[in-house]
Image (cartoon, rainbow, N blue to C red; front, side, top):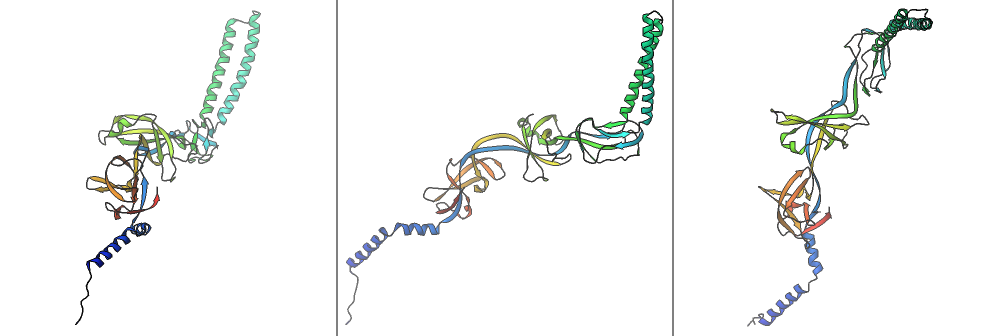
Length: 351
């Protein structure tokens, strides 16, 4: 007859006690290692108060500080050309000399006559002192000298009209004339642009009117120079708002010492509206859910907790945090999609 073997209550108590002791004295490092292996890897950013620049963006067209088409004042043949395409010239520099041989001959004739008239005036003046010549004769000779001097100045003015000079310093465009060509008033010789300073005209919404003032800093960029910025100041704000577009025209002056900017270029203009000192986070840390915003904050125990925040102003890549978290808290910026409330995390790197 078989004998039935069973577990007594004593043995059951012994097994339970052994399990409890094993749990209590199981190496904590092994438990922590297991948690670390199962933790979600994340990248965090430490929330901090930073300068947060609010900017207004507009598109503008570059214009020369001064610009004109250079033409001649007289109809004459081109005697010489003293510039090349794209030359940088100074104010008063000779560009084109028109044929002035006739004026030179008349000037020499008048100078000879004036020299002789002055000699005769000196002789008559000496005779008048000795009462050997009448006062009327002296007056007539003085009038002749003055007349010849005036004729000389007229000829000089006519000769100046035959010289085409730069009215201001700047960069020339293409040369449109050749030696020997007949040029008439209104014919284009070349263009001249003063590009030491570039004017940028751009439009802003009327809502930005209170934030725009003369002397305000602007930063312009161009697709022609990636990564390079050009700084200037607002020189004028239009006195009227366009009733159709509800926009106001603004003009800024930008120094252009290297002549990199050219008239007609399209520029993106950023106007500094305000500079805030506020709590800032990378925009990718914010999780929008319906009309609310959340972030995951990592505590000292590497456990993530979800917090609702209030966001303020935004700009590319950054967002202002009005409330919800404090400075110094570690916020998850990468790995948020794999997290839940109370998730254990493994921080890969700090930002």
